[in-house]
Structure formats: structure tokens, C-alpha cells
Length: 237
Image (cartoon, rainbow, N blue to C red; front, top):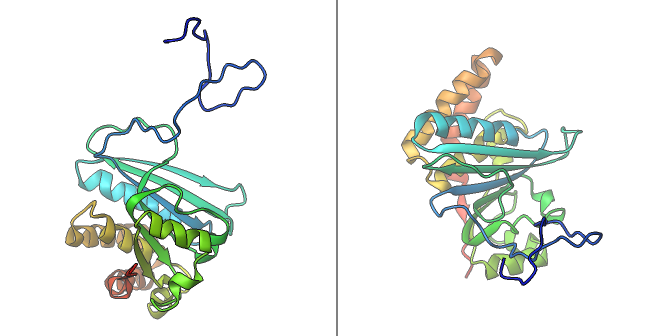
């Protein structure tokens, strides 16, 4: 608008090298208010990540005064392919028809995705990162890609880890890690008070898995009670 001859009709975020209508913009600029909580989850189409996140949206939307929004990105061949879930929670209606670029919380539910995606690119400085991994505190940092090691330190990430597969196996759930990872999210994010979150997760489990029988419900409830004892923080010193 300050130009002598402003463009009449222009594009933002599209590099138009034909009619040259593109305007320069700052990709880090955000119009979202600071009281919106943003979370991104990386998973596989068969591990229950998307289903768990949809449940989390229902739990928060129905049991708090917060508004909730979710976008889910996955391949047309859903089973076994990567999924990325973008969740927002805030005190006012959410009008954000785009994916998250600056997240308070990022979770990677499958450690093999660390070499396929830059999972920390959306995480803001000082944000929380949760990784499902079989490695302990003595090995986990060395197992990360070197570029990710640098990002963890540069962004001063609050790094948490859990062996969700171990929890699932011990509770008779096989490879279904979604419940364990959901418990970790509610615990670390603080979107709901811990005890209330546990009650609501258990209620959602009873509602979701009742048709599969009481044994499946009991296994999921056992996962809820066992998970937090397997969650730990990686000291970055």
C-alpha cells in the first residue's frame, strides 16, 4: 500500500513467477493470540494416533470452556503411512484454516519418523517435545539425527520420552500405543488438570471400546494407570 503503484490483485505465500503478483511476507508472522495452545503429533496410520487426537478434541471441547480444532494430514493409503495431527485449543472461537507453524507441544509417536521428517520445525523455543522410544536416558540423545540434536539444544526443548510399546505390551495391548501417548499429552500439556484428565480419558475409553468387550476396556484402563511411571524427562545438561 505504501508503493507509488501498489499491485492491484496480489498473492501471498505463492511464488508467482508468471504474472509476478507475489508480495514478500514474513513466514514467521502469526495472527494467532498467545492464549491458543497448539500441538502437533507425528504418527503412523495404524497406531491409533489420529483416533486418540480426535478423542482428545472431544474431551476438551465437551469438558472445558475451551474451543477445539483439529486438522489431520495423511496419505490416501492410511495404514502404515505417516500421519500428522494439528490441534488447537483456546478460550475463543478458532478461525485458523491452516496448519500449525509454531507449536507449544510436539509429539513423535514413532521414532523411525525422526529420519523422515523435521519433527521440531513447528516447535517454538522452550516448547515440549515427547518421543516414544525404546532407548533410555543413556542412549536416547546419541540415537537422534545430528541435525535434531542441534535443534533440541538451540530451541532449549523440554524433552520427554516414554516407551509406549513396553507399556502397551505389559498391559496386553500389543502395538496399540494411542492410549499411552494420549495420557502423556494431557499430563505434559496441562490443558486439563491431571486428575480430571485421567477421569475423562477413562470415560472416553469406556465409550469408545465398550462394543469390543470388557476385556479391551480393562486393558486400556490399565494402560492409563501405568503410563506415567514410564514417562521421564531428558536432562539437556
